[in-house]
Amino acid sequence: MSYKSEDILETKSEKGSGGSNYLKLQQSQVIRSSLQGISQLLNTGLSDESLDISIKLIEAGVHPQALAEVITQIRREAESTWAPDESKES
Image (tube, rainbow, N blue to C red):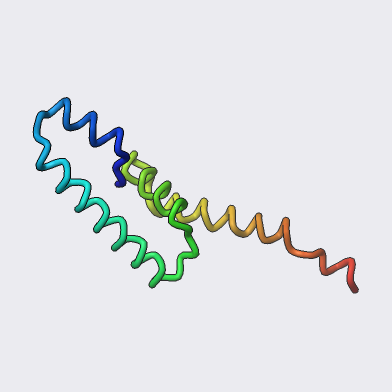
């Protein structure tokens, strides 16, 4: 989960604890960086933005396996749309 500066300011004004907000932001950046590294090691092909969106969807309750299947299906459809039609070349 990544924090925006607006989120940090809202949290600070609502909870009144400025020190812990900085720690949460730092931990969030470390976790995000770690997840990006894992994604690259697993060769998922997800951009940083796609990975962030996927994480937010999972945090919102989307089943991870269902999300993976949808991403795979979208990639297949995109490849078939953008791939040259080999039947016309023969």
